[in-house]
Image (cartoon, rainbow, N blue to C red):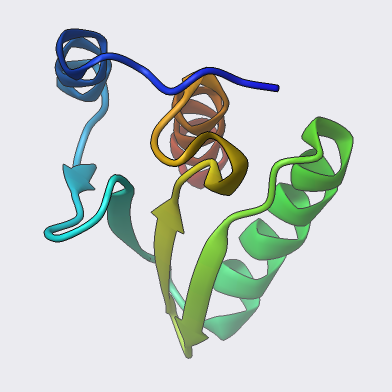
Length: 96
């Protein structure tokens, strides 16, 4: 099982991510991705879904047209782990 990051490790990891922020009231990170249109957003989600299955680590997300609102947390660890940071980095790479 993945271990929850310490406060210092979480802050350091977040400093390396662009546009991700901590979710108020829970140990999670969030980012809203915006794409050219629905097709681009859905294509990105499909690529991330394949990665999520491979990692066995699934995002919480909500899609409306060209926007995807993503929240990442490792539920069985009770907070943010290296899995969330790795997933966030991949999401950013796939979105560019």
